[in-house]
Image (cartoon, rainbow over the protein chains, first blue to last red):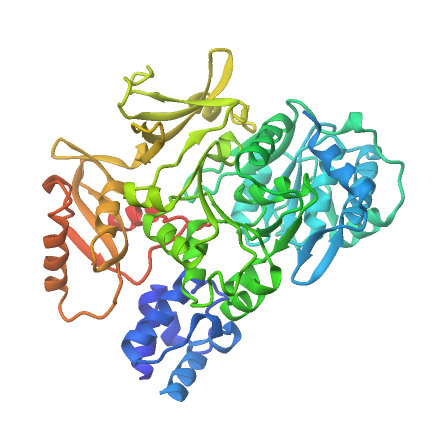
Length: 76
Length: 506
């Protein structure tokens, strides 16, 4: 699961920084923007089978690779 | 024409307690807007700052920003909005080109080794709290004086500062008043940063009519939970945004008439409105109007408009951009600079009211794009267009993204357009690969799929090609398909084709 999430993040950000530093803030560093966030949600749905309605997406709960992995694991 | 600033002042005098600005529930009135801008104008007027030189205003989207803009204009100078999210390099290059009289820093300004004075937020608060002797209306920016200068977003090369005069803006506001059926005292969505001239479409038509601006700062639009909880509270009736922002909102099932019953019209500018986006909006908001508009920053936000009705959706695959406002006109020029024959395509060229004087401190670029036509200012947009049999202007892509491959002329945006109609494809951007002689050797399509899951890249490409054959001339067919999750965007949310071109030609 962890690898799948990191794979998605690497593809979206075009950077392996996300796998090197699992606590990097994806938004403050500009690695993710809102269009990429939309893609992230769609990818998580397609590859991990978790459905996060866009209107429920609270950015501060999803702003590092570690938080995203924990979220995905808790929702499965 | 009544002065724009005098119009706003008049509302403030008649109805000082009317709400002008709502920033996530924090409201400010017309009276405050007048008081603060009067105080700043009085301060600037009494200062030793060089007259006529513009001022940079660096900050986000809070009320202080617009009070500052109006204060500067009341003192007879133009303002240059620079967004708080701009890179240090961008701030530096804008300062170098603009040679401002001063910078007003509502947020912390990057250090650039500047010599011009900086007015901090704390100092500005003090200035705005003082009761100075109001400046006379005679001192306001008027006529052909610059009102604002907005720097283009250019991701490569040097940005250009587009000079917009008072009368250019007045012509735009007048057109909005007449041709969009806006009611007095509208409540408008204000989402674009002030450094992007789309913001002018909500700011001045609203303030000159006593309406209210409902501000959605970037921090809120980026956090979808906040965005979608705030949207229904704002009770916006006029929606102004890029189509891309509406696409994000459409992802929520609650973005519809039932949840947003006040919405009466959508006004789009800044990038091409696709058939798909317009269709979805018509379905979700059957009682709202959808307007497509078109225009470059160089001709004051927009100059053509048309309503996208169900009938238009039925008759057009690529949506028309409409008809020109009354006090300007569109001519189409061929390669030799002559007017194209009737029915033929040509470079969209705007003549008349609203056309800028040119780029600030850049005569070379000004002379390349601006000229005089029948005694009026004219601007060559670099966009290709034609008039269809209904007299509607059709946008056909950028001239500078036209490539030649094996002797054929190809509009990269045409290829994108065909690709976006393929059932498997969400969005696409096509870019050329050049050989050692700067000739195009290949077209490469970057494709975002609707469903990112697929077994086999080769089979996917075959399936797309099969479908493309039905709509696309064979010479337009991209040689390579690259599947990506997103396309890079420029600061203003348009597809950043230039960065893709760089990437494939590295």
